[in-house]
Amino acid sequence: MANPSPSKLAYVPFVSVENMMKLVHHIGIETMLKGIADYIEDDFRRWDLFDKTPRVASHSEEGVIELMPTSDGDVYGFKYVNGHPKNTKEGLQTVTAFGLLAKVDTGYPVLFSEMTVLTALRTAATSAMVAKHLAPKGAHTMAMIGNGAQSEFQALAMRVICGIETLRMYDVDRAATEKAVRNLDGFGFTLEPCSTPEAAIEGAQIITTCTADKQYATILTDNMVGAGVHINAIGGDCPGKTELHHDILARSDVFVEYPPQTRVEGEIQQMPEDFPVTEMWQVINGTAPGRRDARQITLFDGVGFAIEDFSALRYVRDQLKGTGLYQELDMIADPDDPRDLFGMVLRAKP
Ligand SMILES: NC(=O)c1ccc[n+]([C@@H]2O[C@H](COP(=O)([O-])OP(=O)(O)OC[C@H]3O[C@@H](n4cnc5c(N)ncnc54)[C@H](O)[C@@H]3O)[C@@H](O)[C@H]2O)c1
Image 1 (tube, helix red, strand yellow):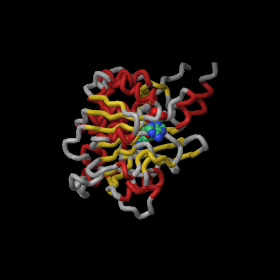
Image 2 (cartoon, rainbow, N blue to C red; image 1 turned 90 degrees about the vertical axis):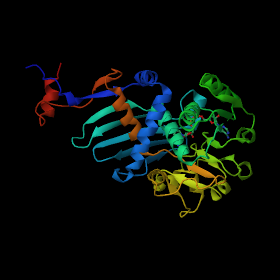
Image 3 (cartoon, helix red, strand yellow; image 1 turned 120 degrees about the horizontal axis):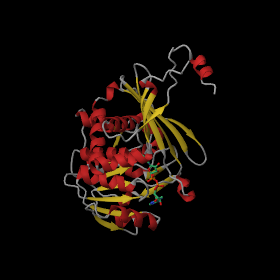
Image 4 (cartoon, rainbow, N blue to C red; image 1 turned 180 degrees about the vertical axis):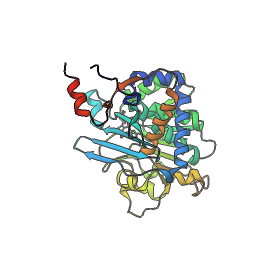
């Protein structure tokens, strides 16, 4: 007897890296950053609905591998992601990722996707969405400290969503800055490579730190940060891996994604357990204040939370329709008689 073919649900749309890049160009990178930011903001607005848990991290000497699950009751999602700062020296990425969405009512996956490119897009979209709420009015200049894989995405999202025009760039590795300058040429920025972090933050209303080092680093010291800035600190995202001197935290208003995760992984791991923070979803919902005055220092201690990945996957799923930019993966074993898994294996004998 011929094997019956699997049901439609057994095939899961898979977005490869190649197709993700095609999708970025099909949509337009600026439109996509804005679209993902809108999806993240919408999901932050319905925060209460989500299952929330700090990500499950497996640490090693060299880095970390993490699983990031969440669900809104209708759809479940997770991301696999690593963070290995030493990888670039071996010609490998610091961060790589993939993830999926599944229907809660059947448990069957409905999307499987690369997420290395998508993580860069969603991290930038989150940073810019947050800065839209917290940065000083009329911000036009951003310091970009750390000019690695995430940096151009960060810059572009800040331009599209917050109106950043001038980028003052610094990296310990000059070659990284030169690469970012080349990549960002033609996007309408005034690009100003700087030779020290102090020079980079001169005249900047937004300071983004996006470096990778597996240690308590001090990218910014207290005396470098004046009043009336917004700090977007995204490189400190693991126990023992931070970017800011704790005195900066002490005089800033700190905004976070999900406190139980950020207290372990973020800049605030340097502060006491009860250090006051504001959850970003409350600012978005209008139940907590964001920036109150022009001289305040606002600090987004961004570590990356599962809901942002869920939103990004949701966005991709919605945009895929009609593009053909995916493959159908035969991913779910689906015997004709659901109880006859064994028989299905037997019948597959060549
Ligand atoms: N918060 C989030 O959601 C999120 C998401 C993705 C990545 N990250 C983190 O962001 C960081 C950057 O990621 P990436 O993929 O761009 O890494 P990357 O390795 O490609 O780039 C990091 C850059 O930082 C530079 N650098 C290191 N120490 C520095 C210092 N003291 N001063 C200035 N520059 C310095 C390096 O030379 C490199 O160019 C990583 O730490 C990563 O874990 C956070």
